[in-house]
Image (cartoon, rainbow, N blue to C red; front, side, top):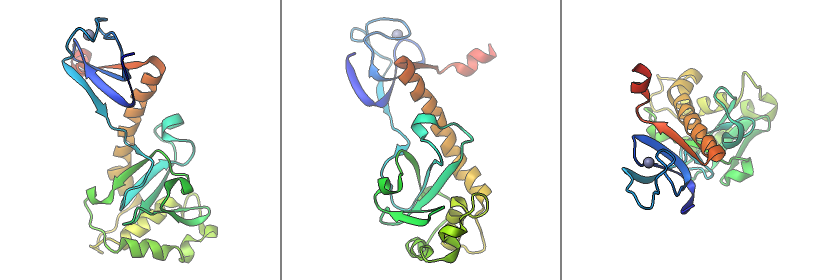
Length: 216
Ligand SMILES: [Zn+2]
């Protein structure tokens, strides 16, 4: 092993095949030639992890309700979501009512997805005040929590709608899921599958001609 990294790397050597790895191997997994003696067509570049351990400000945070993204998550698993304010303090609603903390580990948030609210096609205002006010609202008391009818999604949607500038428009759970959460989860699941393959085999090969070879 010639170099080591915690980050996922990708390179191409002899063919149009993406080679994913954490450590650049001595020999090309495709043609077996010595990588130190031959040029790569695409030198190694880092694939940034979509998973965060520290929250950013004004973001939608997503993690699996049970287990973790890295260990055992699969598409369709239940999700838990939360919001962060301007100071990156996380606000979440669950069976304990509202919890908030600026240290993600206090709330058991590690390896989560973070989507900046600024990339959404909506304008939010007074989010700090609205999030703070939810701490004393009856509807978000611990005993009002309900798995199906008053859960973390209801909380996030309610806060976002209260802070939407254009009050005639209301976000729905379905919209938030279809437009924001599902695309982010799909991307993450694809990358996690590559990472699991690399962990099992040391590398993962992805043909960039996949579509052509299927049709020919
Ligand atoms: Zn090669």
